[in-house]
Length: 230
Ligand code: OAD
Image 1 (tube, helix red, strand yellow):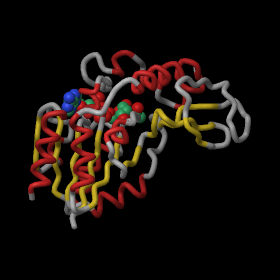
Image 2 (tube, protein in one colour):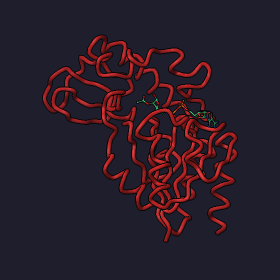
Image 3 (cartoon, protein in one colour):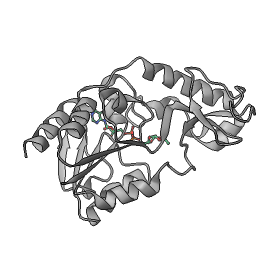
């Protein structure tokens, strides 16, 4: 029984119609990271931050999984070993495609988090910082997403999965944001075969033993077909 750990990034959702961050015209060309994706930005102007995530939540609610998400769900269901998806994405397209073993290391648009007491609850489509927390009633609602300067979720479990992986694949991620950008090297050193599937070579392309470059919607189903044949 082999274990496959798959890291996904914004590129896997691009063909569903969600923007990536660092491509030309991407999200970080339209918004300043420090304003909308840091705890300091939230303290300065929480309404601006909520407007940004409300718009992303609304957009994400109107899109569907593409053939890359569907292929990964098929892999989980048809593969004889274990398949774990670690995603940097805050959309729910892996769930929508039918994958079940998913770690949202950067949180999820579907979640609300109370900055005062840490309580979590399902996010309504539109949120505001003045919404009272259902547990402590303090109006300190924030999206349950991880911002720059914060620690990604479930890191202990993720490092353990990487150390147990026989195969590690990174799909649709530019390799610019740590700790995710270190996963290929970590898994490779622990003995995994490493595969990059991305539109173009990522920043840390040297950490991968096998490369597939092209749109995820095309190359991921082909790669999954190949894995399921063996
Ligand atoms: P990026 O926008 O940095 O990178 C997306 C990658 O996907 C690029 O390398 C593109 O070439 C590739 N790509 C674009 N379209 C593709 C397609 N159709 N098929 C395959 N690949 C495609 O996004 P991430 O690497 O996910 O964090 O960014 C990582 C983190 O940085 C995000 O989770 C977010 C962001 O700032 C936070 O907000 C905390």
